[in-house]
Amino acid sequence: MHLSLTEEQTLIQETARQFAQNELAANAELLDRHEGRETFLRNLKSLADLGFMGLNVKAEYGGSEVGVVAFSAAITELARACASTAVTASVSNMVAEIIQAVGNDNQKETYLPKICGGEYAAAAFCLTESGAGSDPAAMSTTAVREGEDWLLNGTKIFVTSAEYAGIFVVWAVTDADAGKQGISCFLVEAANPGITIGKPESKMGQTGSSTNSIGFENCRVPASALLGLKGQGFKVAVGELAGGRIGIASLALGIGLAAMDYAREYLGEREQFGQKIGNFQGLQWMIADRYTELEAARLLTMKAAFEKEQGLAYATAASMAKLFSSEKANDACYSAIQILGGAGYTKELPLERMARDVRVTTIYEGTSEIQRVIISRDLLRELI
Ligand SMILES: Cc1cc2nc3c(=O)[nH]c(=O)nc-3n(C[C@H](O)[C@H](O)[C@H](O)COP(=O)(O)OP(=O)(O)OC[C@H]3O[C@@H](n4cnc5c(N)ncnc54)[C@H](O)[C@@H]3O)c2cc1C
Image (cartoon, rainbow, N blue to C red; front, side):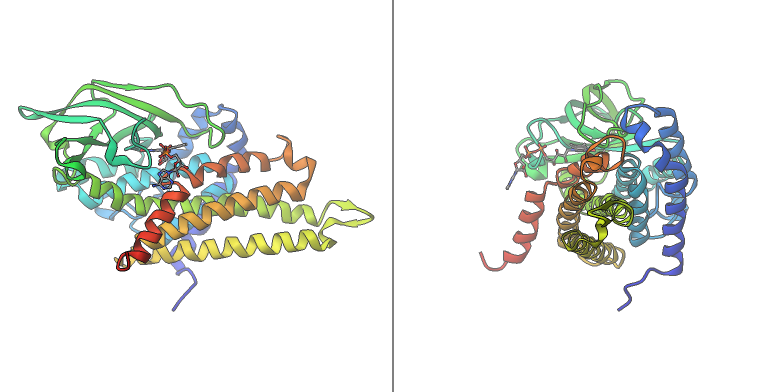
């Protein structure tokens, strides 16, 4: 059993680290203040140029084809510097992987090079609705066949990157009587008429990344926009969200590590009672616990990534990684603030931004409670 990265995975990790520290870190605060949109979009293009918008996509479709472990390592490095950029990359990679997994040749050839190559700034995942969050099967957006076309009607909410994405993967009910088997998935180009993008949500964190509603009003798409088989959309959403959770676990880990690294430095600088505060055992134990938890989060995340890469069943591992990593990264950000005392609470330093940025990682792509539902369902499948 090997627990270290391969040479290629290390190269991806180092490239991501350099890009993140040289290009993203300095602008993270600017993005947090809702400024620097041009810089943000330029950075997304640079990420595409580096091959980071299709890390697990085949080279024939413009991807880097470096696998899931490298994807995870890269997202962690991006998130150490800027969570808003990291989530945009993570979601775009997830959407590209959905198209690769269930798209037909024409869809893969048409859309994957545009996502991977940066012609589209980002790609968006449109599942959640006001009445369908943790329970996406309760969605009410419909797609009705009209001749050779489909007509989409409904509203999706909380869509990451909606306002600059070039392509949306949209879930809609195609057979209201068939329950989960009545949900299908569509590829909708942003330029398609019948789409209204709502104003960005005013959020607690990750404010550099836009989160918008998308309204579909008699949005007409061709029959060829159906992604995968009719009625298989729910299965696609559930399956692909598992992969997305590896991205969010990796992202949370990056924020938690950045916060603890900041706090660790401070322990060697700040003096109280005539000595460095790193001499106080209460704080030594705090960083020992947090780094141990983050290392465990890294191993869980890498295990899930490895299992996905090997073609093994990985959904439970991905849920465990997302659950643990997001919760421990939240703890890490709060401990880091505690270590800095009053300074940690101010906007002069990046820790309060990190604490706001990390908060949503226990919520999106399935809340912690839903991860526990998935994990326990697997554990108890044959017993109850
Ligand atoms: C910044 C941001 C970006 C997002 N990006 C996207 C995106 O790109 N695409 C997209 O489709 N969605 C996106 N989402 C939506 C996100 O995935 C949902 O918010 C999330 O799945 C939770 O749904 P909800 O908000 O409706 O909460 P609800 O489902 O209403 O949950 C409310 C509470 O009830 C709990 N709960 C619900 N069901 C159970 C249960 N069975 N057992 C125990 N507890 C339960 C939840 O854990 C939670 O604590 C985003 C959300 C945010 C905040």
